[in-house]
Image (tube, rainbow, N blue to C red; front, side, top):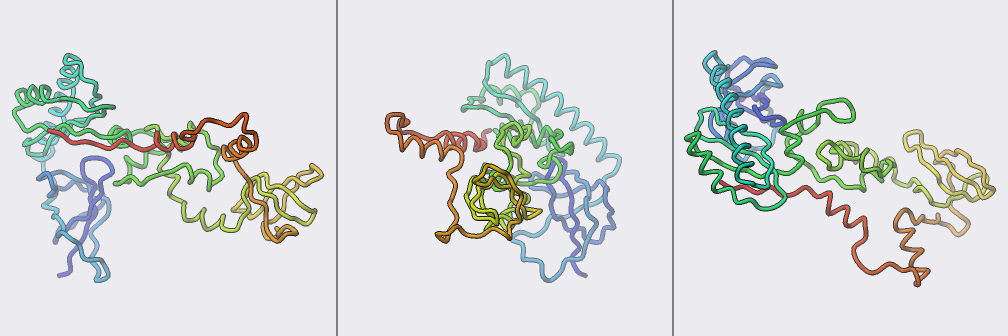
Length: 318
């Protein structure tokens, strides 16, 4: 019998994995008891079992199994675990305030069998939480793990609604974060406004990367904003681009503005277009021409912004 694969979302948001459904008849929305790296857990079926095909790549590890649908006892245990997590969250926050620790507690995860608790937190610097772990272990009589996470992971755990009006992608379906840079916004001709380009976590929107390949293909060979080109009416400067409509808005040498098709753009008389010097590069080019106003050597603002946009690395401790 061919292996049947079912997609299950784990209890924590955004984590969807393939499981071996065996001969279980499952449908979307079913709550099931599953094997996890942390022991047993409860998940939700998001895609019905499908027969595995020969074209599927070989997996490094065998698929974990869906054991069965949850029963009344499983649901009661889940309720007890949730209540225990809320109690642990309140107790840990009180201890953090009393001990004056510079950390922000985000969430507590209690294992299905109660053998371990994970406390997720954020902090700017390293935190000595050994005393806190000792008090937590005495109170809840189980293994305690303190796990430091970044601001994106915080948004993923807490959830929310984005500026698009939909549930945050990291909460809904993203299982891993991909690096996002300001260059993606530039390629899509978006205004470089941090408030419009940042998500609730304060980092660049993950959705900027969704259409990266499409935009890169569409802008290939299209003049940049500020670039000087030759159109039917003569030399002109590109003011804006409509890459989907394949049209440009340009300013002619006479000062008039016109809209032209990208296909009608021709090289200048010397056989090439004049490249623009946009944004901060234009300012630096001007400073180079006027040495008396040249800026001191050091990192450029754009380099500092790139460093600030890097999500902090998470540390584990127990």
